Figure 1: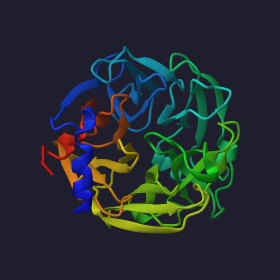
Figure 2 (figure 1 turned 60 degrees about the horizontal axis):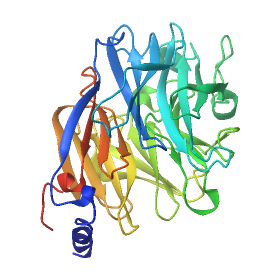
Figure 3 (figure 1 turned 90 degrees about the vertical axis):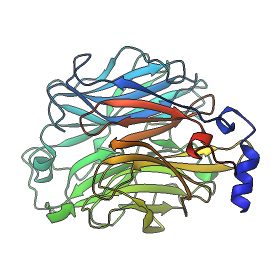
Length: 390
């Protein structure tokens, strides 16, 4: 009852907490338009000037995961109501560039107006072949110092964060060889609490050793930078077989909560790992029985409440067997329970990424299924509460 009373007290304090439900949705990346047959893998951040930067993979010849894939971006300066024309941010010729993981660094003294880091992956073969050692996935970072207008500083950081990768014509008999590799996908985070304040943390995953049934060669991990992207270090591996695509949030205590796709489909639940040292090592792991999942990516983010307290929002297709039923959940106790939820779209829905707009509204950039393009939905807390008078 105390939690319900607390929510009631904050409802009247701003637009996002008003007693009026607000919801709208806009197409952002439309399949078959602007030079691409398909758009997948959304990621979104709010810029220092309040604009929204929406990223995706622009897939030239269809929705397959491998091929001529570019990282593309659109900008909204009116809180997601309209979007700019498409900008190609990364073009890897005829090969793959994907898994965008953007983050806004607001704590670098050299860039008081903020600097954006965009981590991404490249690949020269299908994931199934890379898992066998027949190809290489690499990790890169670029930067924008003008709110996403231009991008510079392209740097291959694979030696630092993907050191066990199999290079071309290299022997693949090492049991520790890492094959496939992927950032998030979705936004990365900057830590704001404790001794690791300012750290850039990027959730990731890799396949390790020979491919196994049920994808048990996949394991999640992370990598981080304490010098604003100059150098990078690896976290410990989250040593749970079949842990895959990940997204992270910093709790009020400074603990990192990494929320992970379980690839085998045996559990039909999200896997969670907790780190009290800023993502270096992992204190505990568990399956969250409330967060059902059909083997898909998901998103998680902090929502700062007017009195300084925080809630956590989570989005995914809430189904055990199908990529349908895109749902927003809310936790008031650092993800221990998720008592509040609302379905955003009951039909086909897949990957998503959450953002908090400058006006306090909540945004979700999400796929309408694997081949339905990418839309942006924005809504307030009262919409999540479904107009409930608590």
